[in-house]
Length: 81
View 1: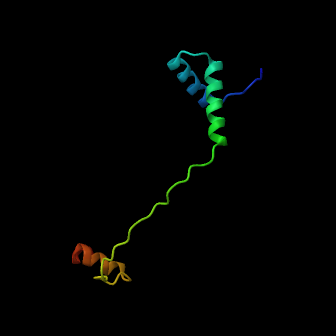
View 2: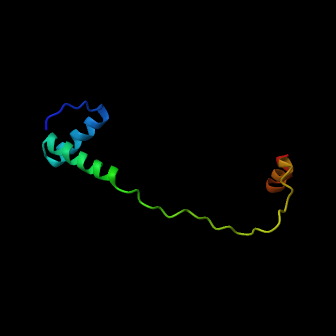
């Protein structure tokens, strides 16, 4: 089948690079890329395992964090006020 495609500049640069690396015709490179892309688009999405974090009990607060200036002074020394 013959058709005309308008290829965006960034894609054309990548096609040119792949064409030079593989030493294949533009037709072969484009057909291969389309086959791979279409196959990926039609595939079921991979199931990802959910990311989980573990929690740790750090004990009670040593400083009242409602007063930020006081918490910083406690952490960095009294000169931080």
